[in-house]
Image (cartoon, rainbow, N blue to C red):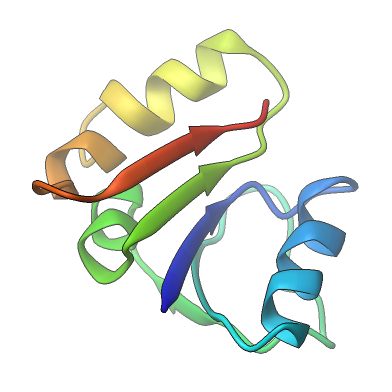
Length: 91
C-alpha cells in the first residue's frame, strides 16, 4: 500500500519513517523540510501527485492555512483524489 505523507518536519518525519519501516511505500512532496536521509520515499512535484500516487494521504502541517493550501490550493491534494482514497489530517 502506498501512503502519501505531506509534512516531513519534526513530527511528520518520524511518523513517515515508522510507516516505511512497517513496509508501506511512502510518497511525498518537498517544501520546507528536506527528505530525511534515512527515509525511503518517492518524491513527486505536487500534493495532487501525492494523492494520485497514494491510497491514503496523511498531512502533518503547522496550521490551518497550510492545510487549506495543501488540500485546496492550486495542484492541491483534492485534485488528485478519487473514490475510495482517504485523507487523514493530523495537523
